[in-house]
Image (cartoon, rainbow, N blue to C red):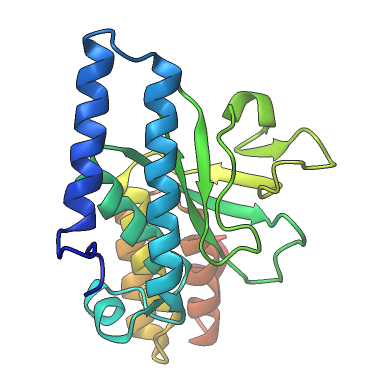
Length: 231
């Protein structure tokens, strides 16, 4: 069965038990902070491996559809990683990608992935749809420099094989906004799409992709003043 070991035990339960045991050992000074972070990193790698094997690339972002079709787009993968991280007691940071590891985004293209935070403050990039789906642990402030509203990689050689420009999203509302934004993008009726984009902005007023899509939707309906106001 999926997400179970050979004895039929839930992998998520087993991973959570390992993390809780490691946290207890750290609290009792039996292991170091670095050892705790290493255990967390190992579990995140196992999690990433299972996601890659079980969930293929597709258009689904709704959890019911992901479960049924065993496929997901970047939003679906990020939503899944966020839920599983919370179940394990880990911190997942949804993150917009503004420039991939190996290329720039196409006009109108959007991409989101997950930064998994370790107890020692380092993060792991988790992006099942990327050429390098999981990175080695790294310090965010050392790998990137702040450029306005986004982070840009400092080493152009990029030995970590991570995305070059990213924007960590501050909270769960940003991920929900991205889900609404994708719902709008899949709508053929621009009037309905506008409702979804507005819902996205209600959740996260700073979620810029929804503004861009909202402007396109207004323009398609000939509502040019509203299109200009959305940019």
